[in-house]
Amino acid sequence: MNHNRRTLLKGSLAAGAVGAAVSAGLLTPKAVMAAWSKDAFEAKEVDAALSGAMGSADASASDKIKLKAPDIAENGAVVPITVTSMIDGTTNMSILVAKNNTPLTSTYELGPNTKAYISTRVKMGKTSDVIAVVKAGGKLYSTKKEVKVTIGGCGG
Amino acid sequence: MAKSIKLRAKAKDGVATVKTLISHPMETGLRKDKKSGKPIPAEFIQEVVCESGGKTVLSAQWGSAISKNPFLSFKFSGAKSGDSIKVSWVDNKGNSDSIDSKIK
Amino acid sequence: MKKIANVLTAAFLVVTPFAAQATPDQDLREFREHYFKKFPDTPKNDFINGVYSIDPASREQWEAFEEFPSYEIFVDKGEDLFNKKFANGKGFADCFPNYKKGIRQNYPYFDTKSGKVVTLEGAINKCLTDNGEKAYKWKTGNITYVSAYLAYLSRGNKLNIKVPNDANAMAAYNRGKKHFYAKRGQLNISCADCHYHYAGSKIRADILSPALGHPTGFPVYRNKWAGASAKGDGMGTMHRRYGGCNKQVRAKPFKAQSDEYKALEYFHTYMSNGMEVNGPSQRK
Image 1: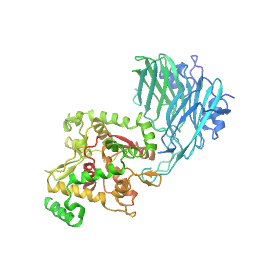
Image 2: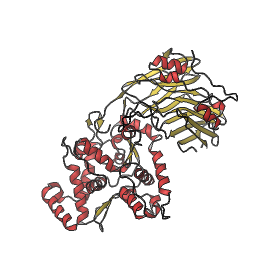
Image 3: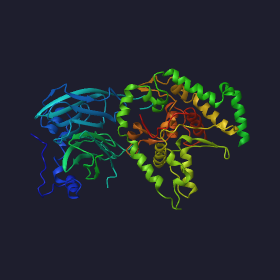
Image 4: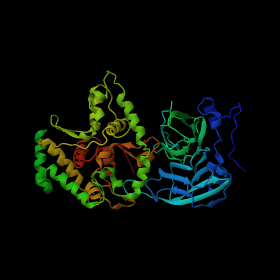
């Protein structure tokens, strides 16, 4: 089941935080594409998180996704991650940290002219695979990289 | 307004590169206050939306695993200097902020 | 005060052999040569980037942070504080008239009249108290924001610390030098052990940064401090870091802006004379 439902705001405002922001004029209705995927973000397993975020857990490994992440994170609380997809027609991208309590860190819906490129910083609880999943043509593709998180000596 | 969002948007050869730094605790809700031992309540951005020229460029959903003072960068084509750009966020507590700017 | 300083200076000349003949200038030359020889592939001014000047893996992460560093949030805060008028109508600009051209490179300096080392944080708080305002706390918060703003405006200026031909100044310089080279704490480690002799080596999972270039980047945004507590915003002064370092070798830390740390900062910064200010900076 697809948990990623579009919230259609045809005059009736959705209750809650998003609705409040909309009524305050901070988020124009057409910009609110989807309600926050609570199930996906609270899922404790990668598959469940992916299903929630992208509608399926069935992703094929692809070498056309570039995942830039450090080999050893300087600090697990701020790990710079950049994902670039060279797969035509990429519409969505997600970043997961396999060994985090709740693996899904974020998911992105790209506009029609938006490049398949996302750069951000994530928290990692411990050494883990960072998994980048993209949706293109309705299918899922993924790549992963292990990022080590260490206990420092003096600096960390 | 927009005191929490720092935005840099530059267009080159029709492609806009957007970089944003948002001042926000991104508290997971899993930490405890060292002194009182009480849990620090979750406070994290759940949605970030970027619009340009009236169209949605990016719609992001975030969890609490995005780092404190979050950074986000993305790119889109069909952009030129002077185009409008807007970035807004909403967090789990219902707080929000937005910034209206122009692509350089 | 001067008499005691003279006695101390005399004591140093007896007790510490290396201090006997060397002038600060000679110390500076030897200090730099040590690092230039140890890390021949590092461009001389690049030492201002600390461990990132000698370790490519962490440099890559640092460059990712530099795309939009967190400290910019605090430079903005510092700018707001700097421009806010005091109750008496004056402002920080009255105390730092040349701030736009950059002033960070002149601190710390030795005030021969008072016989004391003046740090940038000290000058910031003196400006407040001289104008009837409450002084900031020494290690975190507002003082780091104003210091960050002033450092930011000073970027590119070369550190220009002076040790005048004055007994008290030399005493402070030598006191700082002594602290740097003296072993301390349960772990019996000196600043020099990690940052001079073993710079570039590993201490558990960390790489020891060279002391050359240390002071240029302060105040500093540390990922460690940002993550440590809900309130901690990551910003800290040099004396905050000194305290942390002393604690890490299980030595009792001195107080921020104590004479001991001011002396250490004086020596430490002098050793980076000629290097470009690049504060505030992001570090581990």
